[in-house]
Image 1 (cartoon, rainbow, N blue to C red):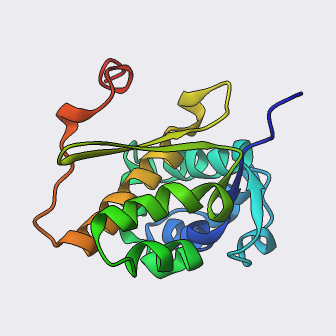
Image 2 (image 1 turned 180 degrees about the vertical axis):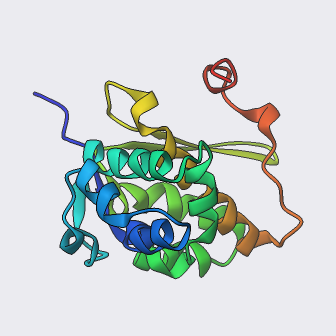
Length: 177
């Protein structure tokens, strides 16, 4: 039985054309390059295949000549744009429950066809998101935007002093730097 196709909820990408245009790029060129019609980004609850969503983010990075586009864009997204996923995370009684909710509901509410696992080892928690794709590099900007959004969520949960600690990155990720 083949694996289900990974699909991404449009949610945060609704702001992408305005972000590109606001930073001197052409939203029309970005949408064209990714074979995305503007109407597809108007419904935050709609879904796009991972390949098209990834191309949208990669095209945006190329249009703005910004190798860190995903991080910059992800940091600007209002958390409420993620709808019910934001609600179950940001309204949890504590950080542990917020992370459990994130792991539990991401597949249904944000990234379908992905594997999500929360691994807690004492005071360290790692959220592992595995996308089903043959080309991880083609998804770099999307993945980095997702990480930026997660960092903003953690900051909202525990305060502005929170920082991600890269020494806990999986060695597969560390080795790719």
